Length: 332
Ligand SMILES: NC(=O)c1ccc[n+]([C@@H]2O[C@H](COP(=O)([O-])OP(=O)(O)OC[C@H]3O[C@@H](n4cnc5c(N)ncnc54)[C@H](OP(=O)(O)O)[C@@H]3O)[C@@H](O)[C@H]2O)c1
Image (cartoon, rainbow, N blue to C red; front, side):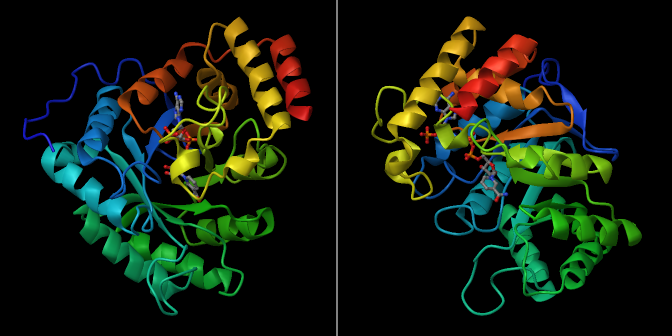
């Protein structure tokens, strides 16, 4: 890692827009940075640091982590801890840092899902790895159908009371469980800050129930995988490049890239070009056209990708004709 002392850009907040998360006091940047991929032991640590610096220099003050991000599990948090120590610790109060627990993290009955035991132990581990006293938002990473919802929610309430997290969030909860969770948290004076769900042009499920429900309960909504892991960029339009996520991760398999999908992506790319945008820019702008979407959490494997994606902010306006055309393409 670079030994040079990092001084953040003085104008870092000028070009970013910040949106209120539901009815809370928290503003989040429209574009946030995620650590699921690109920050594990299989990625260069100094490139990651450059990405983090570039993000912060451009007003991205929200970083999204989870206990199991790596590989191996925990590696992204450890790396983030080193970045904090090296460059960002003096800016801790400018940062909004998220972590989560709920997917398999350590062996045995307590390293997975949503028990009080698991959530509290995992957060203690995350804080140690990230060299932090507290996180800004702690998520239950997924709904646990075998643990009473009240137990998971009370653990979140107690975590906030303990000062180890300032706010709590839900990730990937089905609407029914989310409704009960919002009610429990509100009744215990720890209103849910935000719901995190997969939302992009190819996965529109949250539009029907989850986004309106979050809005109704005063929670924000933050979209993960807004570029469908790179499908909604020019990455795969001309084949599968070596080193791309499709060649390095089990989470994006080449089988998804069917002729039908490619046809759709190329048609979307044409619309983007007519708007004077790249496909990635349009895909992000399309999500942000809805004011109830507090932020989109992008991934980036290079500073160049991050820089390009930040340009989505320049044109978030869609005409009714463009929206109808996009809808038609997405129905193909
Ligand atoms: N709550 C949950 O369960 C959950 C689940 C998944 C993700 N998340 C969060 O959401 C974050 C983002 O998810 P994601 O990484 O799937 O997001 P994404 O933005 O949909 O995909 C990011 C990937 O797309 C490619 N890419 C990005 N910009 C590009 C550009 N301009 N041109 C070409 N390719 C580009 C890169 O892949 P290459 O490697 O090919 O360069 C990059 O790593 C995660 O880091 C995590 O914080 C949460």
